[in-house]
Structure formats: C-alpha cells, structure tokens
Image (cartoon, rainbow, N blue to C red; front, side):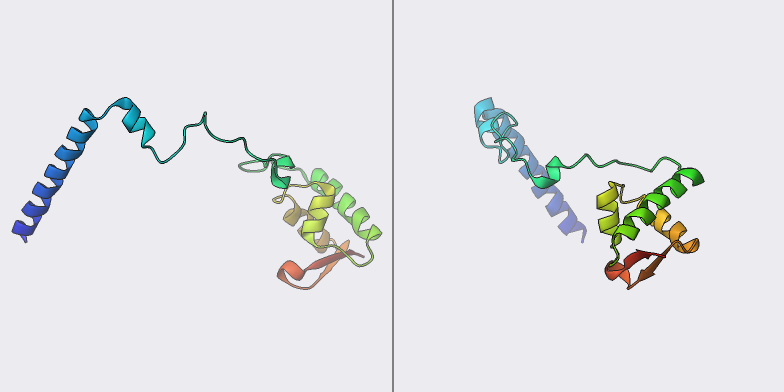
Length: 131
C-alpha cells in the first residue's frame, strides 16, 4: 500500500509541476482568453422578468411583532375573507395584502385560535373563510 501511495504522490507532484510550467510559459491573453466564463463586461444585460419586477425579498428574521400588530393584520385578513364567500388560500391572502410569506402563519393561527376564521382542507388545498 505504501508503494501505491508513493506512486500517487510522485504522479501528483509531476502533474502540478507541469501545470505550473504551462501557466508560466503562457501569456496573459491566453490565460484570460481560455476562461470558460465570460467577463462581466461582455455579459448581455438581464431581461426583466416578472419575478424581478416584484419587491425585493427581505432576508433574515422578521422583526418582532406586538400582539396589536398581529391583531391589526388579522382584522385585515378577516375583512378580506368576508369579501370572498368561497374563501381564499394563504398564498392568495398573502398576495392580496402584500404580506411577507413568514408573517402569514402566525396571523392565521391567531385567527383560528380566536375562531374569527375557519379552515377546510389540508396542506396546499387549505381554504380559509371568515366566521
């Protein structure tokens, strides 16, 4: 096994020396020209997509919300649900009220707990209605 290890080490050493020799003998233009990635100056401008037109996503943790702020959001959710007799999914509520995706679960949980809203269905088929 030590013979195998020494053979691998000597081959790796020879390979590294040959790579360094090739790099030293090459010109800067050859090195930069053979790169597989285009430089930032030659890139085409990005096309504007629907996702790029949206507001930038907030990163990190949400700011701590008071119970008053959550109750205020719940009031707006209940008002929205009263306008929709068939009910709405959480994604639709979030999109209409322009809430962050991390804000809506707490608001809906408080609404279910206080029985101001009710839900039917499971997972993505869950529909929320006002009581």
